[in-house]
Image (cartoon, rainbow, N blue to C red):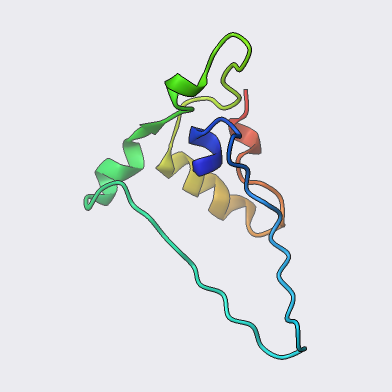
Length: 89
């Protein structure tokens, strides 16, 4: 979401964690929500921040919802590729 709302000013990196010592590694997942009401949060529209856009820097992503992004993410699975590709203009 940060990549989408910043119009690629903050780009997610390819996740490629390896253990330094051959043993187990620890990952911490972080989740956020824009609302305590999941139904409301799923329908809220997100787009690149208007103040970051200009003629020289047009929007890269279309308006979308968390619900639409999450539905696509779960349908595509974890294949190592960005879940944002279908939302590019």
